[in-house]
Length: 340
Image 1 (cartoon, rainbow, N blue to C red):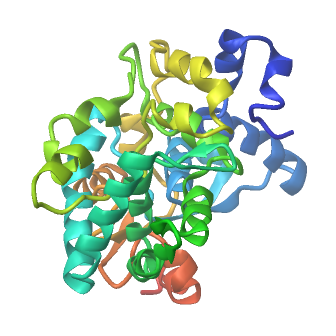
Image 2: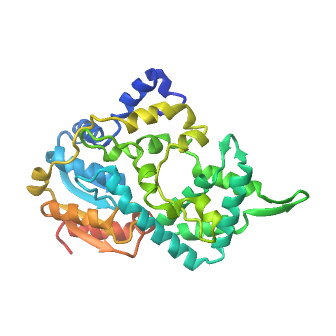
């Protein structure tokens, strides 16, 4: 059953919706997996592959139910065991800035193109299928820069953003639709609703961490950049309150999102003592310049899980398992089975 703006009201109001969504984190996912495993394997342990947030789930699995695991493979998904969401984003913004700088170095013509697009959006605030197109939404297209071909995709998107019309130069319908499609959460609203909640542990609220921490990095403010002559910096996979104002798929869920952001009763997700005594074979690919998952956090966690073998590489971005699946999986399987 999909959980979105159409179906969540069946649960009740925003409070009931938030309480329901609190069960979609890694702790509940692992409990579900254990129920499914008993039905599928008759009780035999199984091998799991965790990509990105799936890796967070795998580390939770090792903490909560290692008896269900035969082997664990993780790609781009070793979480910090104790970092608050603030810490995650404080480390993320400098990584994002490096990715943007690399993109502009590859395509220097995109600096002025991005400024022109952001300025147009700031002045005209167009809408596409009910989605308000804003400079901040445009900046969020930087999420593409965390994938192997993302820089090229972003460049081609910017390349023909404007068209000449009888009324002057305008953002093309093609660009506006592409931006709306890339920025919309209609197909995956849980990503926006739970993105920061996956880091929640204990009594401290996440409280829109990405939005608050961004103020410590004023170079990401589009309005400030446009007043000067600096580049407009793209952002990454950060979620902000304005997402729930501009996106019609999220707008009805704004109060639900606020309740999740202010929640202060998150269960602790990881068990350092159990991880230190781990006996399950584990191998993890750590992408050295991963835009989405901090390398230093990943390596600290790898050292905290007994017997975990890492493959640290900058050959791939966060989507390495998609871009180079056979090679990545063969490498991890050889590590986890002590054949490397």
